[in-house]
Amino acid sequence: MSDRDEQKGFVDRLSRQGEEALGKVAEELVGNPVVHAAIARAFDAREKAVAAQEAAMGALNIPSAADVERVTRRLRSVSQRMEGIEDSLDRVEERLAEVPPDPEDDRLGAIEGRLDELARDLVAVRDALAPSEEPVSRRQERLTVGRGEA
Image (cartoon, rainbow, N blue to C red; front, side, top):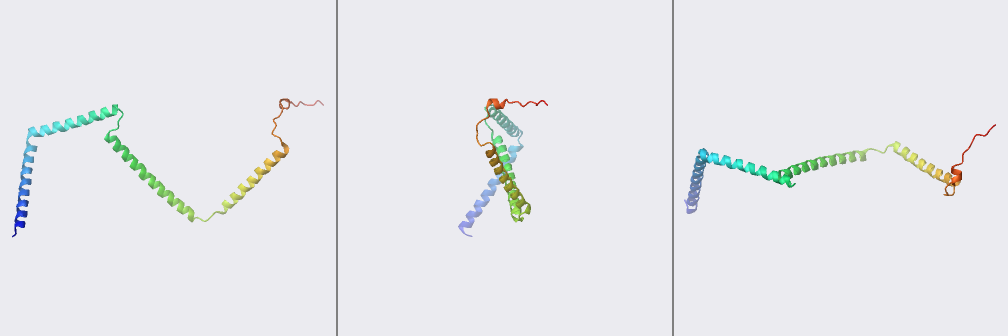
């Protein structure tokens, strides 16, 4: 066996013994009622400090880390939903592109064209009948038509 193998074996044995010793110390500490009570009080104090910090931040209208995390999760959720909607719209557009044109569309286009022609004709008739843009005089505005006596 070489020096290198002996050193590796020594390091492994030393590492194992150190882990075992730390494990025993940790078991003893956890089993000790005084240490256990101290750890429990420390965790309670930490929870109270976090609650007080959140209350203070809330009073100052500053979001806590939990608030930021909650908003981040909601934003991710909305983002995923939007991606799903975009994918659905893409599929709908692909399906619409595959559909042959409907003869109804040609009829609608013809109807719209005809309506445009009628609108132009109405403008021409209006211009022919009332060529000037002068307002009606006050006298004509109040003109009343009475019944003729027979």
